[in-house]
Amino acid sequence: MEINKETKFTLTLEFLIVIISGVISILTVYFTLKADIEVAKQMPKPVVTETEWQLKDQLIREAIINTQKDVTEINKRLDRIEERLNK
Image 1 (cartoon, rainbow, N blue to C red):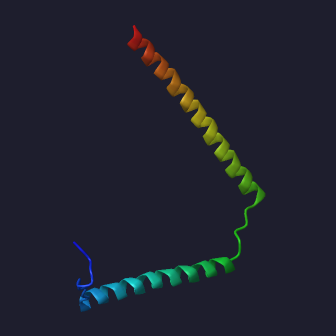
Image 2: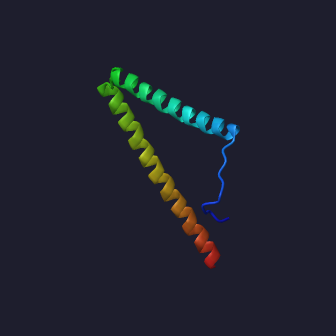
């Protein structure tokens, strides 16, 4: 397709309505999000107690240790499989 001085570009009424609707939708989402962010800024910050912090920290540490144990077990199984394959 060549574009030159004689190329005609026509807009139908339906296409203009689609473009305008899309722009309105995007603007509506933008301003709604902006308003929600402003409301969230005014809300009080959640209070995390020392006990809650310690419990969450302990839970995360236990999850890491359990994951390490699982990885070690998987490695042992893999070693056994490799030994069986190499026989």
